[in-house]
Length: 194
Image (cartoon, rainbow, N blue to C red; front, side, top):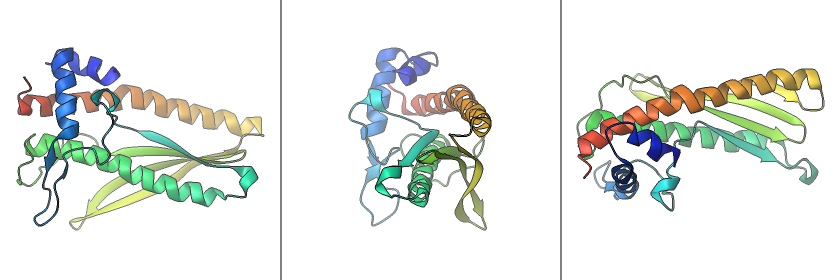
């Protein structure tokens, strides 16, 4: 619902914003020759347009009591990070190519490079990771870095960790959300939503 409200502050009213998000979610294009048609933007469709999401962070945890290790959460977090980055890249491609999914090569985006955060947990251990992607010699590379870790049983470690999480939340609900809404507004303008 926040996405529809934010889009309606652009050039769309709430009805047009809802229709646009539904179209964006259901439209299928052929990204590569000899490949099946795929969703234009989101690889996993949400049940309703109101559920369309552009995540900036995810939590992956393992139960301490089951003997699962934190590296399993880290592996899942890496996959989640890559998926979150892919959603951002797909949106950038729609902005650069046009909403109809033309085969024109994408131009350089005016937006910041994609960034995604994950929190991994196992029992009292928490890790904060940053994930990004860059193109080197024409090849897309994904990277990640451990930003912080803490043992929640040690208060002095937990305070800095919580400040980091707060900063990520402020970024995600502020500049990140604003950039998503601006890019969706560009795509909606190209799609001429009625």
